[in-house]
Length: 319
Image (cartoon, one colour):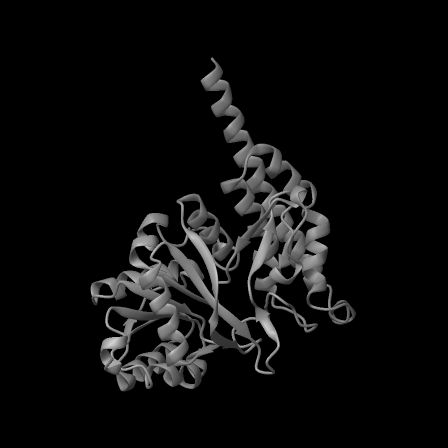
């Protein structure tokens, strides 16, 4: 098959925030080897010089851009990129972090998988630069909201483990994207991929990690994060949105008993999230504790408002 035909109808979507250097290192590596691949870079606003750098790089490489006037966050940024890719004729989308690298052959395998299984959301296996596993599938316990890696499967039935796929690298068909409505708003960063996975399953779709496709994630490129976490301190955004958005996910998607259970475990889980950055960070600053306290406050407000709304709805329905 000619190289250009291999990527017909395929697009890669990258949401950028102050990471034009990563685009020149990582995205260029893919797109120069993938003739015919549509490329859309969504540049969330950071600085004027960064916007200029992204526009210049895109022009030099033949990429398309979406240039919102504000920082949309990850999920809404991806939604804007997919919409632009649709306008350009794409019907399969590879969602890729700026700090992730995937070779053209691996991208082609992912696109081929979703062409054959359009109702399956697909991730490659994601490794760190040293070859260790960063992501190969994960579960969230619907009982208390704690995460576990696929290596710990099977989980006990009482954990009610539900699989999810990391948004660092995902491949999806237009058909499935339309069914789930893209990423939900309100998250900004983190947990929107958990909700997307949840909604894929809810509409009858499937999740899969493609064993024959590999991507590399350079930890610390855009945020200090990972499914199998290193011991370096994370960003304030990592702590805040992981703690807050856990409760946002519960309030939006789970029955009342589960929402209450997730709220009850919010403080110990917040501590577990902080420990992903190691204990030494607490010797340098109390800022992680301040961030966690704020996130717990905001998450609990979301839960409180949702439970009140449900109670009012139940009272009206019962009257």
